Image 1 (cartoon, helix red, strand yellow):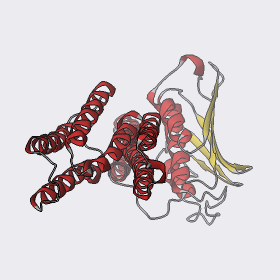
Image 2 (tube, one colour):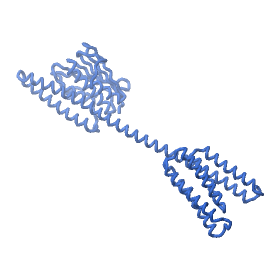
Image 3 (cartoon, helix red, strand yellow):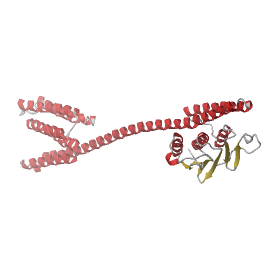
Image 4 (tube, one colour):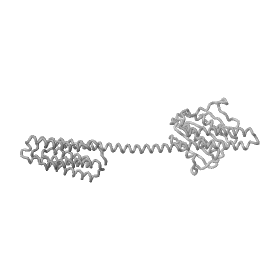
Length: 406
């Protein structure tokens, strides 16, 4: 253990210096005629040795064995100094022993040594002739008692301060580690979100582009007008893909996101005689087909603003990505001819259903990035995805998120 309480580190050293200077003044002023030169040398040497002990002790990591050894060295040196002290100033230093015992060895050791020194002082006073009735002896005993109490109390405060500081340092370390972990998880979550966005967006649009270009190639000789329209649709799909990639790579924008408008734009780009999509938004229904396709506003029909009121952009975008992935799978894998997309309310949730008449599959034995991305995206918002399908019976995907989404 390194230095734990810098002010306490110098407390004992200051007391040693004070006793040393007082002894030197006492000798120099001729107030101790019975103090021999040899005793003075032992007195000064013992105090200097105690000063060295303090500097060594506070700079070294502590073990219990080391603390016991240093405490015993202090006791021996203090006894030597007190024995050579002709003026009795060093007796004030005995209060340091319980202090160090408490600080390094615990409360029991500190209180035990304080009690021991107090009992020894009482015993010594009782052996002196007239000691119990001598006001000076009684005063010294009282001052010793006060000193021991203050030493133990100071050590208790110092120990509690050290414990609090160590706990604070540990909490700071744990908080730093937690912050690093949160940052790593946030980065991983953002990477997963971008991966899902790119898969759901770019994958869908590339499929649409591929279908439209194949259609243009097939009709290039038979009906150039249809081929030109397919190329134009492929160009629009590429433009939408580029825009969505930019949005995915950047942060989410602040402008509002309309699920109804986004779904209609999605359906609009899927114009194909062999692939029809029926869109049902809160009772307002439109069918994507070769003759009926067009925005409801342009046909004089109702705007697609029905359905549940999603207050969070993340929830609306999550349902849109599910619809995008489901339509892509229905077209690319299921060989579906008709798909119904419906958005409705179910209690406090907004629900999206995508049902196709394709060839179906076994959900339990099928895994892919698309389905996994759906589940991860909605789970992060407190929602869920249910896939119902059987070979030859089509597929129904039901996704739900809290309407008061994030």
